[in-house]
Image (tube, rainbow over all chains, first blue to last red; front, side, top):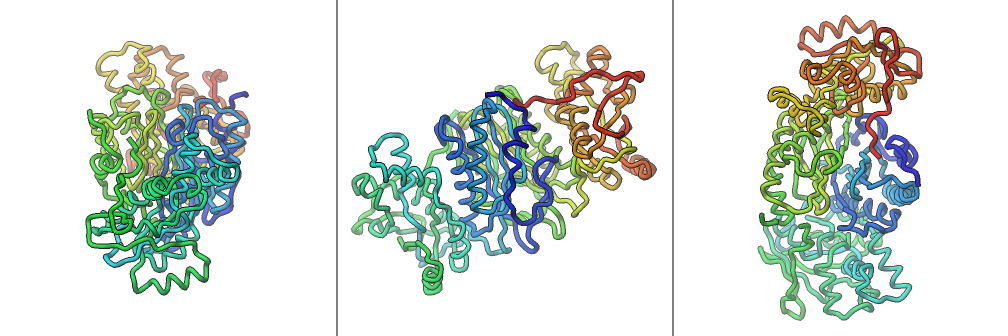
Length: 320
Length: 320
């Protein structure tokens, strides 16, 4: 395939726009210009996905792009923020039309789901890497922080935990899996449900929240550390999906759920006096959430099974 | 050197803060939370610098970090925006304390010069690469765009052009250079003057602006294309520094000035009726600016020397 220059590349593959609030000037000048909704704070988060580290270099570019958008938007979901804009730093060894067409398709499909407008970025030559920054708005003082969990709060998680780790095991071909389960796992890995909707709803009652990217216990520990508390999770209450249960034995499934990461569910805490309100919201919005434990005096953050502590590495994904 | 994990790394090397407006929540949660000055637009720009492509992999990390901040901030300068915050995507093969200490020193030194607060980012393992996003504020409708140059406008440039290309030639050891000139060149490359102050001042009179990163003629052509005009630059008026004149013969110096790039000066256009006001501003603020040509009917964008067109490649830096 012919290589094309940066300007043509941007024009051809990244000028597609998703309508979103407040874009005054998009791609094509020295800066993008945007307007934050009046009276709101801007929430922003950056994620880098490196070829050969966070995804196989030969992975389908459409899937990589979709995953990149989703995992980055997940940080907005964890704050209860409303997605608005994104910027893309794309580094590639060569600019290959077929690859770029796929990448652009996946990027804009995911962007559209969250009404994210691509307003700028940089394309460079080098080892394959994707850096995305997402921007969203939130009412002042209303973002869900990691630091506001209190002793007695109930710990919840959205959806299932363990799907991300199971999917990774399948992708790495450590496990045989049937056709329908394979589809489920591929979707869990490349197109994880991102809980933007849920984040905005639970924001009314949650004291603290985080998205499960490093692993449930590691991420819960981030909440505990920031809030100066501890946590007890009950193994028997963990929502583990049917495909994961079928795929492996209960011990491995539990380990995946507790330490696997890549789930992009929200883990959040709710004060006891707000549980009734949460249940109303759950019924009204059909929220898929599960109570899995309780915030206790710190600093320990443990999982109990039949009253005994489950040994697990809670240090999470090692970046180095 | 011992490797350290991501959380300790951030705490140790990147928690240093530069005071800037509107930081509600910095590093350490799922998102940063910031407040844009009321009634202002947010300007943002992302730049990636790849090890082995944009800088030598074994270059001094302090210098790389300083350069990364400066070249990225240059995009804010070109819009006339006020720098506020930055985010950092840092990818490294290993987390080496000595390297990180130097990188952090250079990063915060440059950040302090522009009152840029590091509010978030991502650190990952992989081939050396730096992605920076900078954010600044500008009054609505006041940003200098590329698209507002008009026939008859006078073209100006800040400082000197050609220093960036000369410095690169010195770094690549294509040229012998004396000790004092070497220092000048190193500074031009790793610590280019960034025209934030000038950008804010000329914003009162300029019709269009861009920063010279791809090369003067290539960047001027971006203005011409966006504005639907042409341009004539006079070779004899180009501000070329004494060290560059001494380093090489006039033809090479002219080529560097016209096509070299990496200067990070501002190239801007001013309507004839605002030239008197610009001269007042120049005197008052001791602006280092030079008139180099005029906007004409499009689409040609040329440099004349003694009335003849100087042949030069105006397509600029090839990213692929």
